Image (cartoon, rainbow, N blue to C red):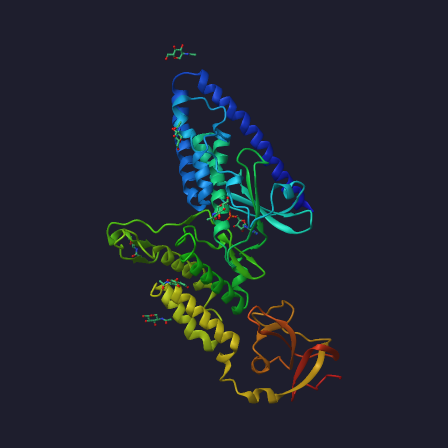
Length: 481
Ligand SMILES: Nc1ncnc2c1ncn2[C@@H]1O[C@H](COP(=O)(O)OP(=O)(O)OP(=O)(O)O)[C@@H](O)[C@H]1O
Ligand SMILES: *[C@@H]1O[C@H](CO)[C@@H](O)[C@H](O)[C@H]1NC(C)=O
Ligand SMILES: *[C@@H]1O[C@H](CO)[C@@H](O)[C@H](O)[C@H]1NC(C)=O
Ligand SMILES: *[C@@H]1O[C@H](CO)[C@@H](O)[C@H](O)[C@H]1NC(C)=O
Ligand SMILES: *[C@@H]1O[C@H](CO)[C@@H](O)[C@H](O)[C@H]1NC(C)=O
Ligand SMILES: *[C@@H]1O[C@H](CO)[C@@H](O)[C@H](O)[C@H]1NC(C)=O
Ligand SMILES: *[C@@H]1O[C@H](CO)[C@@H](O)[C@H](O)[C@H]1NC(C)=O
């Protein structure tokens, strides 16, 4: 109940501040024009530095925009936003670059625009970082999306204000990070990159820009550590598929410079990259091999400098080692199925030492997935295991006596994924409490079945979607059929 109010208050605060900033800024312009001496010099120096910084950010995103659009951008000599009412002659040359605004983004794949955001309800704050804040909103048609905007109370704006004391300019400067992100999200499309549903610019304050994203859940590493191996493997596989895409992307080899779990969210268990503002699209330039060193707290790696003077492959290697140190080490080895352990260890070894590239790593991951899905790793379980159980097809149980196991898909009982009856029987045999288990139609993302294990039940009830397996020597004690 408090959250919508909170989000609304936040937006109101944001608008209020922008208005306030606007006044401050106009005051400053006057101060410059009419005052003399150090205030003016200091101000001009800051202004120059800010404009140079704006120029840098603007140029940084030009390459990702559609080329015909960029030409138009270059041709235009209009003055926008920050430069309006700016009358100091010697800054004119810096005024030339026009603002990269909504019209310059492609609109083919992202269709939610400002119109659909007019009367939206902010339901929740999904997250915030140094630069951006993400709100959960419900659109008029009832669908939920995440709105990402510049965070005016964030560290990024705060630092800029300290340096330049120019709220409007700082807002525009920081907006470029979100603009870069939108441009990249339009060009980089992959199941493991958050989907851009639309964007809107201009309604809130000068340079105010909003990205409309599919809604995810911030990645909870602690929670993930407690989840079944299958789900942890899914995250690592998704990450590897993402890195493979990024290393061969339409924009070249993309490095994620700020590689932390908080740059990712999950959507129905699938990992998705959401923070793209710190991506680098070019391999580092080098003169000697010594320029191509990847430094990490615990390891350094060096690559050769190519004949073209680039550290070729460095972006991919950086991503891969980060995947190893932030994700694989925590998520992958722990509780891996015994028969897959040597393959998992090989992945750990190869990525931890950067012995293989992204392609080899992905291949190894896909092999593990294939084995896991096909149940080939269970070949050594004897088929005779099933003979210990009596099967009741078309039945489920009620009045269950549950026990807990780890890592269960359900908090209340023991719900595990299995390849089939044989693996379920093997698991039930290995749990002293287990006297029966049921298999339903529910499957995990790999297509494995969910089996529930229990120590007893009071009734069997007809259920076309389920079958019950009872351990022959224990099954009938205390059970009525
Ligand atoms: N689509 C989304 N759905 C749900 N939560 C999201 C979504 N996008 C981002 N978030 C959450 O919002 C937080 C801030 O977003 P983002 O990482 O883009 O901002 P940032 O200021 O660049 O952050 P940082 O300081 O970590 O670089 C993320 O850490 C994530 O938890
Ligand atoms: C500003 O300085 C100029 C000379 O540098 C002087 O002519 C002018 O009167 C000064 N203006 C004010 C408002 O002090
Ligand atoms: C750029 O946009 C124009 C229309 O604005 C379109 O015709 C062209 O195909 C686009 N080019 C690319 C590379 O997307
Ligand atoms: C702006 O750029 C155009 C071409 O890009 C150039 O001809 C013009 O002189 C520039 N204007 C200023 C004020 O620098
Ligand atoms: C990595 O290289 C840096 C700079 O050369 C050096 O200071 C650091 O000790 C090295 N770290 C490791 C773990 O080798
Ligand atoms: C990793 O490789 C090293 C040397 O190549 C080897 O000594 C070690 O046993 C390997 N570790 C695993 C877990 O495979
Ligand atoms: C990796 O695989 C992609 C295609 O999947 C291919 O285009 C690329 O050349 C490969 N890279 C290396 C280094 O083998």
